[in-house]
Image (cartoon, rainbow, N blue to C red; front, side, top):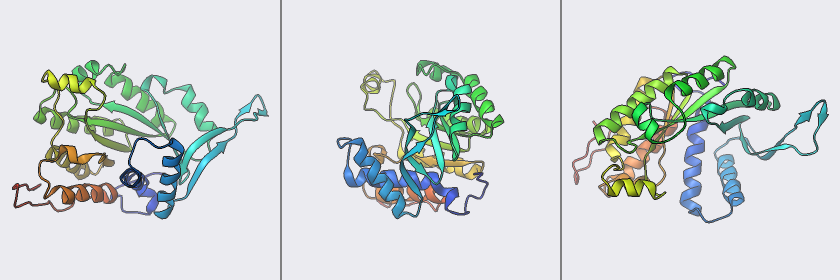
Length: 274
């Protein structure tokens, strides 16, 4: 499935945005984590069906060994609109991907976490990869007509607010120049202990909501690929309770429509996205 600008075609061209929004709805309704994974899976499948998508749970993929079909199948948690997304480290993009593609009837998409195109910060994050590794993996996938999506952090550790936005823009440019079909923008947030320690030492601060908005707008205005903002727990990045719900809804709608919407003005805090 190929998606070309202006991204306003049939529902297949909006699958990524619909899935993200549906997952957020499940999180808002059920909360979490805390329940069994199977319950979240079932709830997400239900929500996606309510939104008009074809969803198959625990979909079997036959595995053949030397001409013999094995008794146990490969099971996909969710198969949405016949598209399979697999997360993979750049070092693992190779013959394993070829073999997995051979097993599938649906379209394969590989998700590779770029995080940032800043070589110094990428090394500090200890991802075990360089931008050259990412580019080589992207070329490999492109040659086999396998779609690439990537994840980009907004303001990772060791960056100022201004530098975080600048490098998010550069990372979007780099990913798209490598042929990424989808870029997911993830505001860097704490929760694992390591970032909290860096924050206490002055090396990490979460991004501002205005930075999230401006970076999404930058990506959408380029019209080169699909860009989505991770809206989970978005309120932690806001500093005004009055305008936050409208700004959150604006970002959610931009995820779905892939267009920049009019700015939200707030008389209380003076915010304007213009």
